[in-house]
Length: 158
Image 1: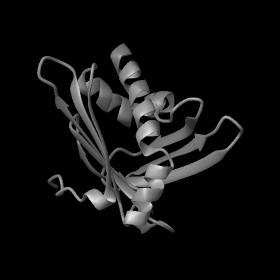
Image 2: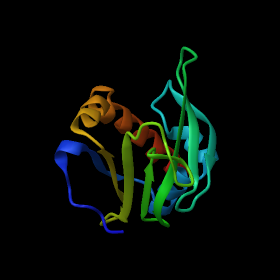
Image 3: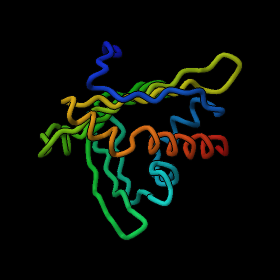
Image 4: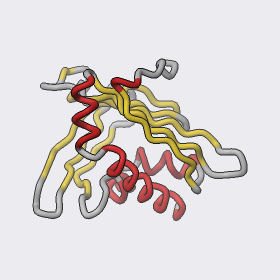
């Protein structure tokens, strides 16, 4: 599958150069023990991560807040190019069973940056402009930005 054409009314994008090797970042996105260390901006955290790393395989976790909030999240992997591209969605809960409400498709792309490090691009594609606006109002840029800082710091240690 090729990267789709941009659709700004439905997309939120975070792109930056990370000072960490591409394969270390890939590991942080795909290994449950590593996902738990960076995925939510602190003081939030994820637990109970399950990952069946293949198209149609489940990616599930619980997002935990500082006041005891718990938000289970489950989706599936749509596409994987090891070390380069990861596409997930919450449109399916497992295998190809539709979820109650689809919110987005997430596409992560990694490429070697000139001079070292990794060009990291995260795109959240939504089913409607209202969903995109809701995600942006929830703090997409700040939250995903902080999580990406945590991702970079962890990847640098691997």
